[in-house]
Image (cartoon, rainbow, N blue to C red; front, side, top):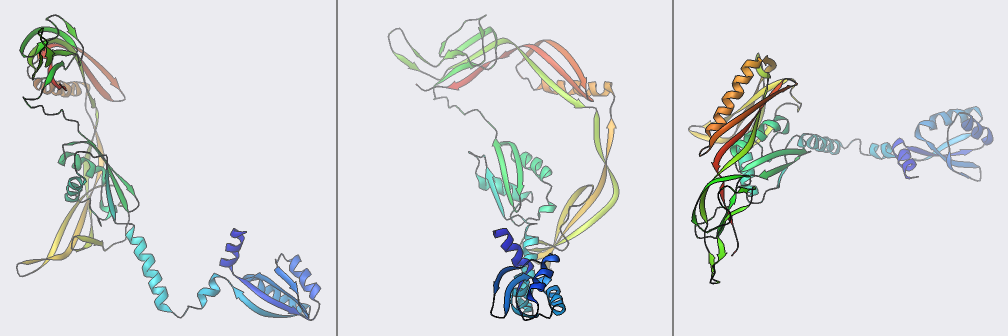
Length: 389
């Protein structure tokens, strides 16, 4: 019923009165030509009914054929109501301006929310994003969210993951903070635990009570030297354990390389868009649309100046340089050489580690070469772990 009422309201309806003549024949003609009538009731001289606004003219024509006098009683509907204001141009101009404002407002960022952060403040994250161009009132089609994500992670090394989700005019920034081991003061009690699984080859305990001996095999997380322990006299010692524990360990490292490398080949085609810059609020001077193809964008602001005084008003230009993605395939030998150099850099970072043996394996799948090296090495596996006395 509600849907029918809405349809009738927007399509419009007419209330009319029929008198004299062959009224029954007029009703039959309406039924034969599928002209619905409702709210039908008799009057002293005929009947009164309601029809669709578009059908009234046809009913009027039928009434002449059967000598029935049809007169208009009332009109109802959206367009009839709107017709009363047809001379009020200011109202329509305001409505058009409001619709235009709503349309263009969808192209700007109105709110940014940061979720997932605990130690890092939302204000710091928003400040770094603002420096990268992701701010309130920023023009959404001009933001490459994938690129901004990478730039934000480089600018904030304390984050391990970041993604920008767009929901209309609202941005939600989800972050994951990088886990860092707690700093332990020398006065704080702590144990020495195994950082890796391995067989102990040498151990030098500087402070604390050792729990294992040389040639013992320990698992990752096992306590090697305890900082809180009890003497035979019953006295409890609370100390900051310290030790050097050299163990023979095994661990794997895998690196992959896509042999189908993609590079950019610029076509030489450029396109420039202009925005009006008012107090860092950039109003586009063009219709909002997604730039086709692949491109790099660079923005520059030209401020108005009076003498040597720079005004916060100017013109902001966005220059797009178009390019095509070109595939540069490398040979198997070149890929192996690249992976070898990468492993050399990785091993150079393993300070204090003596590599005893390497076992190398390779797989090539879908154009991706993966090299895995299993190391057998000797390294210091001692790691401090805080304890509550």
